[in-house]
Amino acid sequence: MCCGALCESGTTVTKNNVKIQTGDMLPLQFEYMNPTFTGEEYPVVTATIKAMDTAYPETLVTFNIVMGPNVSSLSKVEAAKSVRYTQAGLEYNVNGQAAISLYSITGTQVLAAKVNGSGTVDTHSLRPGVYIYTVTATDGNRSTGKIHVR
Image (cartoon, rainbow, N blue to C red; front, side):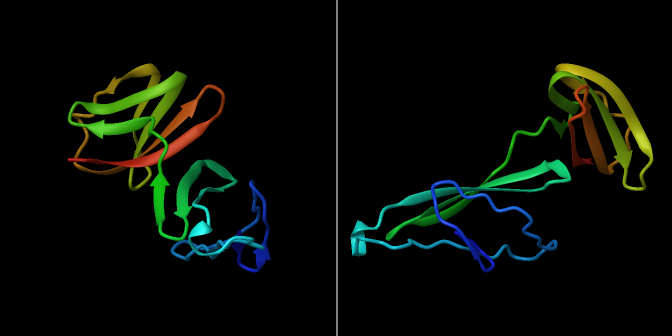
C-alpha cells in the first residue's frame, strides 16, 4: 500500500501522520508487489482502512476495499451511533452511565440529561433546526454528532 510516496507491504500496514485537509482526496495506491502469478491467477484482496483524527478518536471511520482481476468495490462502514433523533425524541443506547448535552447551532446548551443504558429523552419542546449533541461516558470517552429536529 502506498500513501503519497510512502509505500509499505505486508498483511498489516499502519500509516501514521498522514495529513489531509477537509475535502482533499486521500492519496492511496494499492498494487500487487513482486507477483509470481499472471492474469486470472491474481487473488482477490480485501483491505480495511481505518482513519481518524488522533486528537478525536470518535472521528474513526472504516472503509473496506476489495480488489482483484475482475472485482473492485469500496464500502464505508459506520459504527452504530449512540444517539439518534426520532419523532419520539432523542433515543440513546450507551454502555453504563453517560451525560448527553444538546446545543443549538449558536452554541447555547438547550438540553442536558444523565442517562444509563437505553431510552429516550423528550425533545418536543425544541424548535425545528439543527443541533449538535455530545455524549460523555463516565470513563471520559466522548462522541459528538448532529441531529435535525423537524
